[in-house]
Length: 116
Ligand SMILES: [Zn+2]
Image (cartoon, rainbow, N blue to C red):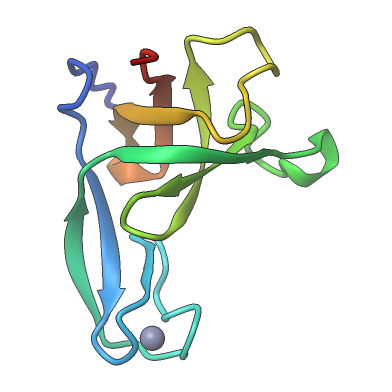
């Protein structure tokens, strides 16, 4: 297992964009979730996103340490952990940025963005 600790804003997040309907999906997707096309183009996300919701424990499945759904600015969602807030108390709608990406982007950690 490789662990990359990068400065905020420097972690990289790959995703895929459908050539047909231009929907964005996670890099682990093999088919477009919108139109079902396999014609997906690799792309690089900026790592900025918004907390969409906190998953119930029963919905976290195999990833109990990654309880949040994050909507990336590019338009797709990922399941991730969020640092910088009280455990389980990260506000919905908070802005976050990617800080670490492990296992080829399958394990993601975000940090709360400082309030402006
Ligand atoms: Zn599509």
